[in-house]
Length: 512
Image: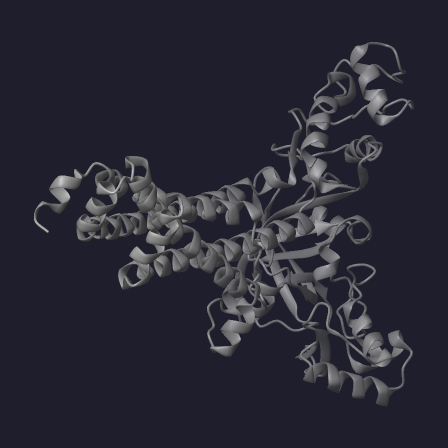
């Protein structure tokens, strides 16, 4: 008797179009969930990776006027941590940038470029336009080879032509890692990809004494800048907030793909300290780690270290040695046995230590809220499908009154009848989920090819700054949607199954 349930369950639903519509509804919902969450998670991962690459893993600053004065001592202490690879000081602030034609409100940041090249990642995004002569000198190739390679690279959209201030032809990379088969092409592209040794303008026609600046892609585009063009930067500097102006010559651009950073401009540290009247001080010190995932642990350790009066210069103990007290012993275990330098900062106020996620916590909170809202919307969509399945199963029970009566008359038990209709719901849920997962995964993994084939521009590059739609399907999302889809279908079948099981066989056959 146990075999009658799957047989009858299949017979009840095989010829009912409305049941197969329920299966297709679940499949469509599952597929949409997989694709949407995969794209959202892909964008989130790309954004986190971009932030992690352009933002120091840990930052030490002081949110007071004056900044950090004895930052060399802070850097020396930080670099003794076993996880720290290096530190990058910076001075930054809002600025008005103005050319002969346009103006732009953004931010300027002074960096120690040698440290940024060695420890940070921003140099990877820098694009410096070069002339054919410069490419030839740096690559060691002859003119004809360079020009031939540039033609191929332009055709492959790996390199683009730009204009210098003298309207001569310059070239810069537009792709990051193209597939190149020619050794000459690789050399030419390598020259265009190599960031400068230092932020310094060395062209013969550049005005003497004017520092160079590298602007973000958004500034470069909206101000229609060219290499060699002069821009005036105005900032509020000093304790009184007086406006200070200074000329800079544009050296190149950097493109991270995010408007969070592409409206910044980079220049040398010393010149920016002078511009903001910092007198050798800095606004903050970026700390780069071997493993960025340990930024939270390192941040807590540095909060203890730089919160101790003995290190920050208050009630300092000169030449601390291991074993003086428990606190010192813990520091020496972490930072080594050599005496720790005392920070002689001339400004009062506590130090602020933040991890890379805390530096952009508003952004990550917004992303998390967006993902939660999208999951909630899709789950509510499943509830609507559940109502559709419930009504479908209810109609099926009503139509199968005679069959139910016959089954119960020949000995079918209440549990058997109830299991029959629960099997229907389970079949609908499992079949729809399986079809939806197959379709959703196939579409998610080939979403770029599908959009190109259909000529759909869902995510315009000028807005979202991506050449390909990033997709990352999480196993958690696959498990979640499977449980919700099957569970919704099964729960929607409970009441119709219960109603069928409670039928009296005599009443069921009374009017037949």
